[in-house]
Length: 128
Image (cartoon, one colour):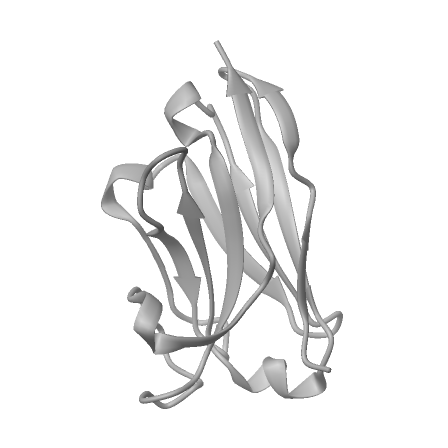
């Protein structure tokens, strides 16, 4: 069964740092662009960051640039989201996703319809 499993979430104080990890269960994820999304309480899911299959291209939501960084370790089939200087507005359920569906899977994407595989999500809570 194809799976994406997030880890590393939890409670963090404002101004602190946290790194989320996503482990893919299948080797074919190495050929796919990967991304992170988040859903704050009572709000819609939004794009956070994406990385291409070849790791050469990344993109981060404009409002999060300078604080959030995406990376991947293809040898371990893992993707990471490093979050620095977190703020209470960063409180959300964070989702890992892998590209697929109507787009070439190896690309760099920032729309949820460009992702075909999703993790269950992990809670990040930032206290003020």
